[in-house]
Amino acid sequence: MIRRLAVVGLGLLGGSVAKAARERGLTREVVAVGRRIESLTGALSEGVVDRVTTDLADGLAGADFVILATPVATAEELMPKVWQAAADATVITDVGSTKVAIVRDAERLTADRQLAFVGSHPMAGSELSGYGAARADLFVGALVIVTPTEQTDPLALKRVTEFWEALGCRVSAMDPEEHDRAVAAVSHLPHLAAYALVEAVERLNPSFFGVAARGFKDTTRIAASDARVWREIFLSNRSALGEALEAFRAALGELERLVAEDDGERLERKLDEIRQRRSRLL
Image 1 (cartoon, rainbow, N blue to C red):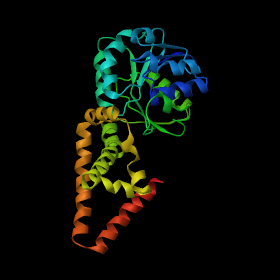
Image 2 (cartoon, one colour; image 1 turned 60 degrees about the vertical axis):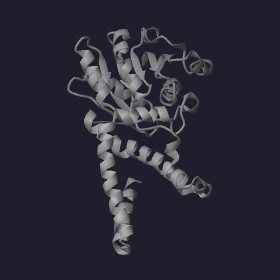
Image 3 (cartoon, rainbow, N blue to C red; image 1 turned 45 degrees about the vertical axis):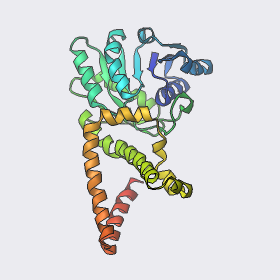
Image 4 (cartoon, one colour; image 1 turned 135 degrees about the vertical axis):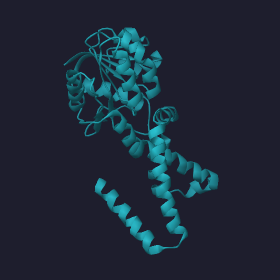
């Protein structure tokens, strides 16, 4: 049982954490911290949170479990203030899509003050954003990647792991660097490609959108995601994303060559290889 859960950032992920923790009875009190009080009052009126504030120090006071659910760059900027405001026994985690920078920040801050931080990345979300899109069941069956290092407190890692499991998640551990490379390939690259596909049609002829059917709409659904959130993710993970883009260009170039060469047999073999790999994901 968490005595006081502080959720910093009450958007899709933060709001879903608050709803799920409340519904499952994991905490006695939930405090929401945000930039604008009007974005927090809905959760307060619904009884999802017990108190709201725009003051970080006020929101973290007395909390024994803190979740940073802001966009990644904002979470990194807040770390020194969080370190100053949190109580000594507080366990801190986050929901960010990139881990290297925030884990590095936590370890640097730990040199001055011993606090427990465990990086977390729930592989759950939606193209929708904001508290209005939050759901108590968002994390059920989802994979959450935690990114401990040699400096991570084992008890804090246990608490964070048990928290996500209590929300219905599967939890796996990865090195922060390997995590960022992996999500660049399977999450960040697909988002960037979806944005590029929409832009490509716009450049060809905007009227072509009029004949877009389910295939195009399904493929580009994630291009409807929050631009600010994805700007921060792309820039935060630009090195690993660059590596993924290089592999994507090579794969696209091979398919482009097979089409240009009118080599139907080799093209079909290649497409079938890719189809079989994709089928194994299911």
